[in-house]
Length: 118
Image (cartoon, rainbow, N blue to C red; front, side, top):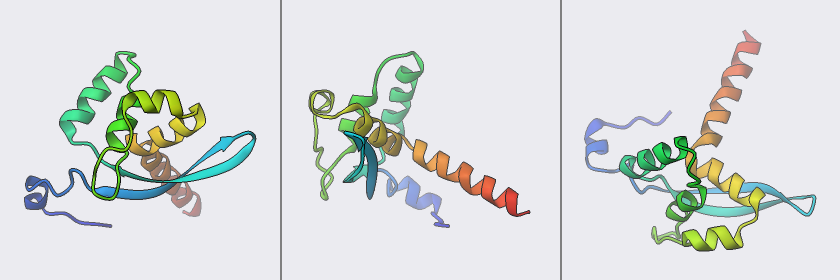
């Protein structure tokens, strides 16, 4: 488990960290994957997106466009590009990753497996 100091948080070390991952999705009945780089958005941005999402506003394309970056942190897609060039399974898979839903699912699976062992 990684441990951070509040002084690191205060210095902004968690904001804009670039993460690399592989996202799986189905296309034409076949399992595919794509390597992505993404950054975790600062609270002020993600909180605003959450609030809009909770008000039934579609924010997925905007969130994806703000999160996908290159190795230097430069945004890779505009919101319009996400809407017009991504297929639904790919957008869903990437959104789950950048929103953090994958992490929640993984934690629940680990807790469930741990309880089964006990």
